[in-house]
Length: 200
Length: 200
DNA sequence: CCGACACTAGACAGATCTGTCTGGTACCGT
DNA sequence: ACGGTACCAGACAGATCTGTCTAGTGTCGG
Image 1: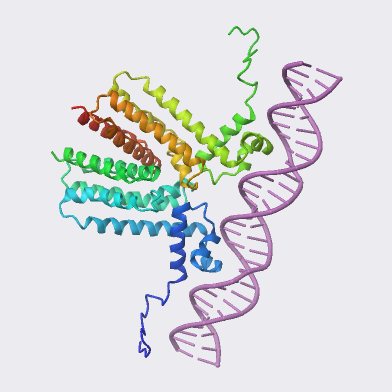
Image 2: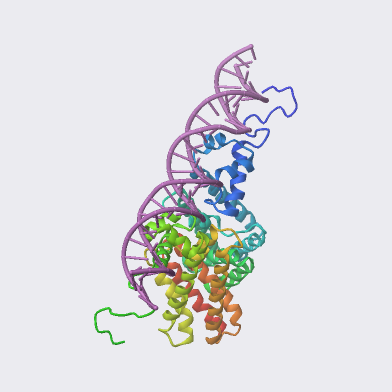
């Protein structure tokens, strides 16, 4: 340990500068999401990341695995963002509707282009890594809605979760296609009505 | 009418064999929808269509224009299928819900892969032909829901149409991602509840 | 000081993509 | 019989894609 010089340390975790891996993931995230995984070539990614091509292939092995890593990053980010957004609410009903508020905020930001999993899936063959991560993401979303529906006292939380998933998917797709975040608020309104009816 | 010899005629409209244009469109429709517009190359299309490359370029001019023609064909087909499906119902309420039944049937067929416009849009740059045709298709859908909502006696047909669009988008996306047409029936159920509430 | 390590720069191979061009065939109406 | 039209088969050009390989740089622990 010792360490005479200043900032001597960060013994294990953090390199002094963003690692090639992190810069690659950041560049892939921006470009893949904005333009599609198939449209964006390796060369564009390494150029934006300022990284050598050999580093990409020694780190990820193939473009497919970089795409998987990109989607896994999106999955993790989405979970933390959503859970953090729900912390603002105490009432179970507000927490459930809060999912749509997080989506409304997100879908109003300039670069919003819909669900990254659906987008990648639309241009990827079935059975690949994209489908795997997408399935995990969808299962997590449905589980979240199930728990929120149960906590809010829904009589049939599984049925309500199915309905909420439809609303969520529709709001995301609609906001993307119509370039307008209104769909998320519309979905929120419907969700509120469904919840009220499910807890009579 | 008449027709002495078998297949004697079809005077003007139909050539004795499917034209190169029609075979190209049929091949493009299958391949683009199943695998994505960017994944499928020109060579695969002309091979499946049994058509020379020169015929493709003299007919459509570019791949982009072939993609536009593919989506325009989908748009037209979707309109006729939907309107034909709604003819089965008289009651305005049934007609409105019939949209979701047509979707349920369609999303249960083997090759279903979600909305062709969304899928193409996910891998195409903004401002191109894909966006144009997509916008036309979405405007038509929303208009249809508006008319159905109005005919069914909704107090605020525009607001109800917005909700129905969200449900429709969500059902389509969910059926694609979960490989299961249940989402359309879930959406139908929600739509029925919304319609009931909107016509109290 | 030195060897391991992480990384950079870029040439290269091989495949694949869009789009063009040449040359030839079959059928059409006149 | 003939010119036009529609079409086919495939070579070709030029760009772009993924992935590999060589060679060199800088840094760090021991």
